[in-house]
Length: 175
Image 1 (cartoon, helix red, strand yellow):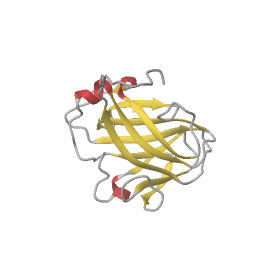
Image 2 (spheres, rainbow, N blue to C red):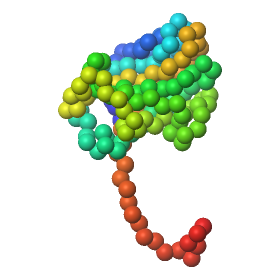
Image 3 (cartoon, one colour):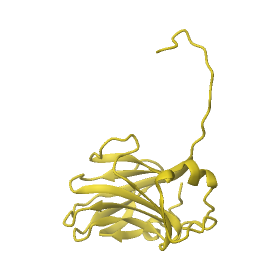
Image 4 (cartoon, rainbow, N blue to C red):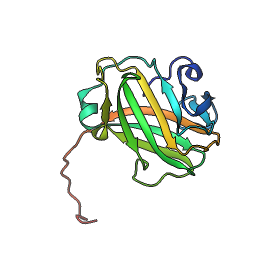
C-alpha cells in the first residue's frame, strides 16, 4: 500500500476541483482511516495528490503486468466520466492510467467501488525515474458544475499478478 504518511490530512492535498481534504475515520474500507474530499464545482477534475510518498523503486513486474487498486467512495455518479491514476517521480514525470469502469468491468455506482488501473494501459508523461517513485494522484474527470461532497479514497495498492497452472482431479470436470 502507498503510505499515507504520518499525517494523511496534510500529506494528501487537493487535486483540481477538490477541496476540504481531510482524514476520514468513520467511513473506510481498511486500516484506521481514509482520505475524504469535497467538490467545488467549477473545474473538470477533482481528487487527491501526494508529492511526497515514501520513495520506492517501481518493479518491472508491476510495469509489465501489474495493476494499481484503490477503493473509492462515490457520493454521486451523476456527471462523473472516469477515474485517473498517476504514479511517478514527480508531477511532470508520471504514468497515467484512465478507467471508465470498476475492477469487475461494471459501471460506476454510488457507494464504495474497487478500481483497478492496469499498467498495460498506461501512458507516460515526461520520463519516469522508476527507481525513485514518490508522486501519486487519483482523481475523477467530471463535468463543470458538479459540486457535491463526500468522496473518499482508501487503500491504494500496487500488485503484480502471477499465473499458476494447476492440474486437479474432480468427479465434476465440466461444473
